[in-house]
Amino acid sequence: MNYQTLLFEPRDGIAFVTINRPDKLNALNDHVMLELADAAERIATQSDIKGAILTGAGPKSFVAGADIADLSRQGPFDGKARAQRGQGVLRRLETCGKPVIAAINGFALGGGCELAMACHIRIASENAKFGQPEVKLGIAPGYGGTQRLPRLVGKGVAMQLILTGETIDAQEAYRIGLVNKVVPAADLLAESEKMLRGILAMGPLAVRLAMEAVDQGLEMSLDEGLLLEANHFGLLAATQLGKALGQISGTLVLLLGANTACVTERDRPGPPQVSFTIDDTTVVSSRTDTVSGSVHVVDPDGIDSVSVTVGSE
Ligand code: COA
Image (cartoon, rainbow, N blue to C red; front, side, top):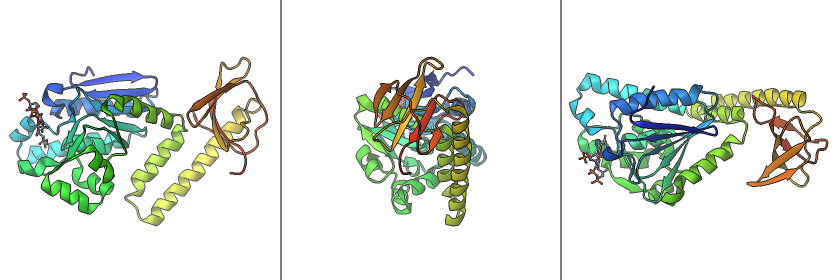
């Protein structure tokens, strides 16, 4: 699909998706939603895309809501259909199996706030503003706001925001737990990419199953959720340990003095050259040794990325 209202830029495993209607503050009309559905599907299914960052074009707005022109024309039946279509798009993004960060660069109102809430992590610029102003227009949130907002910030605060339609700033959004982090506007994309690349350095299967456990567990009883978690835990131990032992014997690295490390082999199959990433510091070494402790493959599709636990796990 050729996008007219989105920019979709895959770069080193990350899809940078920008809602691109800055003259309308990136409001979500039906066309944007159609393209967003396609983008969500690509994120979910394209193997070269490991995660995504979603933002809005221009300095002023992430998304200023559903397009009021569309809303003004709708009746009860097409209104319900529009809500369900939009809910489906956001749910596809939320369950795409890969981490999606909303980089909120301004207004996140109505459908914009709802879109941000369907992402797994929200990073806001200092000028971001949040709200569910639908009641002021005589309607109510339709893209999941009444469901995700209370799950994120609690019923009482969600009620207040939805019933008053008030707008809150980034610091208040951080205080109530609506966003994970607030950063200067100039750093928003870089900070979002840094966090996402950190997540992508972990095992994709581990990340996927952890997201799934959180997402599904919230709808389960505690006992059901704990069982789901234990099943994932066992599955990860089985798949990753087996693969690690089968594929990387003899070439691993012992990292002395740290409990965990990320190890990436470069230039296989030449002389071993290995870079460790420990707390964001990369150390390149050619030392190889025997691993004691447990070994987990981080990237189940390849063998060039492993994490090594040394010592007493
Ligand atoms: N749908 C359609 N168009 C929108 C829009 C929306 N949700 N939000 C903003 N726009 C358009 C405006 O109509 C305007 O277009 P125009 O220049 O062709 O007239 C353009 O974006 C710029 O908006 P403007 O209102 O001039 O900017 P502002 O800085 O004065 O105000 C807002 C910014 C966000 C406070 C204001 O645009 C607003 O209240 N928007 C509606 C928010 C809303 O209720 N969203 C929930 C909908 S359910």
